[in-house]
Image (cartoon, rainbow, N blue to C red):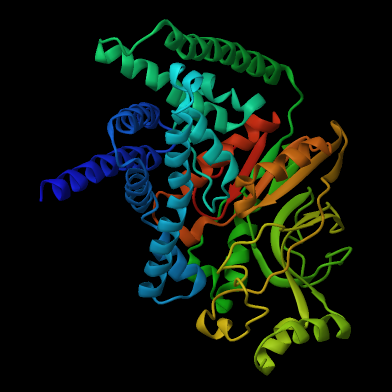
Length: 474
């Protein structure tokens, strides 16, 4: 009985640490998140040092923590994927437990590394294991311990050279030194001054770097951008009868802008729900023109399609297991894209981009093309295709010359590889168009906005985020 009590008590302490980190994630981009992030790091260090149930502890930590931080996930899966809430809840629980695999690895790696004398002497086992876990494991929501520190720009600026993973490791390494110092016994050694010194250096250099960037920006030429957020609910946006009304709202809001002083106007994801031919060259005088009266360039989200050849359709049907009804056969006949188009002042399309990283259950159904009957179980799930365009759009402006823009649609602003590749290919500005209406009135739009901030830090490029609901800004 005592053993059971100790096991439950230990799991409860790990769970409490998870709740502290969850609280930080629920106040993204705040000073409170900074403080709670450090408290969570200290608790993890203490528990890892004193617990004999490290693997189970990490499972409790992440399952309880993620359930609290991402409480909105079941409802989003229900709305986005069309699942009954009970099924969506089950999928969310499965996701939380699958996410614990990363932290089982962290617990195992920390235990293993602590057996190496030099690693143990430098108190580096947990920081190294944690960084390895963040680096090696793919995650649907790429939250890291470092995300709690985005409000502390002097520390967050380290991501410019290292990415967030190293910040997470530095936090845990510094926390181990602070814990040893607070215990006031022989646990603290001169070696543990190193992470504290490193933290001070990073913050000092980061502060200088931030002030240097601010000074550079104050003297730089300005791209004048009008950004429009329509705040159309997910139910209104999905109602075909309201298609023209929804588009009219964006046209009316844009008309209120003083476009004589603007170089570009940006609308969010899928504002134009009229399916547009993917290779269309001009939209003026057609039903596909989102803003006929606008005489400045417009970057806007839209739905696009390309008809597949008979051979492509035949190949898809051959790969499918089970019967394919007429409705699915019709869906197989086109490639559907979540697109962004750059419309010139005269209605010409001078740039196009098709989303490359698609959201499961919303934009596609895993195994759906091989097992078509799954679409009957999730009728809301789309059958979108991944785009292949990976080069920036080029916008020619009278005062600034050629400006290169790289669109990122929705979740793509959470994928560092896309933004880094765009910067390498010459993108001067990143533009994220998104629709966070799926998340309702939850913390998710704020979490999304804060996570996207890393792309600006990592690439040293401005990131313009334009959302249908949620947070729009630069």
